[in-house]
Image (cartoon, rainbow, N blue to C red; front, side):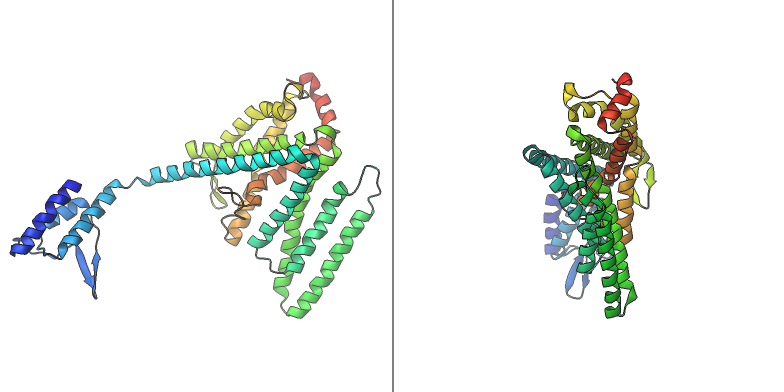
Amino acid sequence: MMMMRNVLLPVLLLLSGTGITLANQQPKPFATTVGQQKVVEPVSASTATETLFTSPVDTNDADAAAAVLEAGEAEEEEEPPKVVAKNTKIANLVERTGSAVLVLTAVTLLIRFTGATGLKGLILAAQIGMFRECVSVTSVSSTITKCLALATHMMAWDAPHLLLNAGDDAAWVPLAFFGMFMLHIIILVFQQNASMEFGPALRDFGVSHLAAAIVVGLSSTWLGTLTEFGEKSMAWIFFPALLVIVNDTMAYICGIIVGKTKILPTVSPKKTWEGFLGAAIFTVALSKPLWMLTMGGGDAPPIAKTQLFLLAAYVSLVAPFGGFLASTVKRTFGAKDFGAIMPGHGGLVDRLDCQLVTAPFIYLYLTFMGGPNGLVAAGSSQAF
């Protein structure tokens, strides 16, 4: 194509310079004039070549002809849309993997040097960050409302795990929660009276408390696991967290490779049944290696196949609906992500949505089984 252009341009200049006119007089297709500006109309390379020999040209058309030929070349060199889309997904996967590895490395180093205390601080920071993202996406404007809602629910959910020891009188915690909640109601009434608009303040009150209840309430069970289940408590946070990471990653990969049937096309159009089920298979298959990794390798306590399968099944079949709920909120308020703290992942809520609905299950399941020792003892005869 480049050779054709190099040949045709001198011919065009020669013809225009000697005044030769081709027999078939037709309108020039290469350029049109709008006011004083010449607008080039791109056409395919074959059409451009044919028109060159059926239309009159002049010297001013040389540049237009070159532009048309270049447009034809560009058109022929464009990649098919499917190839471009697949390349974009692969690039996104690389970006997501890189940022995830960096974050996991940073968290691992933090916990290695600070232990459970550092992990508790990280959980509290994550609560504040997730709450801020939620009220930002939902456009809550009142600073007083946001601060009071967050403080009220941190008192209700976090304080029992952070401020109380076994055997301490915990009666003051619900009393403090009730007092803070009633204080917020009193402030709400005065806000309504001052603004003379009953919608915005009431909306901010409801959205802030709902966001705080979900974010703080669910994630506080990480604190409960840390403070109530002994020396293996940190492992009982990392093990399910790794299961969720494996499930989320494999759902993305399987969706790219074989995903066709969408699960919830309106709520989460990128999630497919093939990715969902493929991720479940990988999560169950890798649950044993992840158990050994987080529980001490060869010193890992025994666990029954049924217990391990139940944990992996919950992560695979139920936890993803935390992500679907987050997608519903984003679609409702027209947001692409909750934030931009991690390249390729969005915000904290985007990254921890499935983790949030896994943490309470682990805490309640361990409580029901009498703690990690009870869970292991119950399955030791069937352990593998």
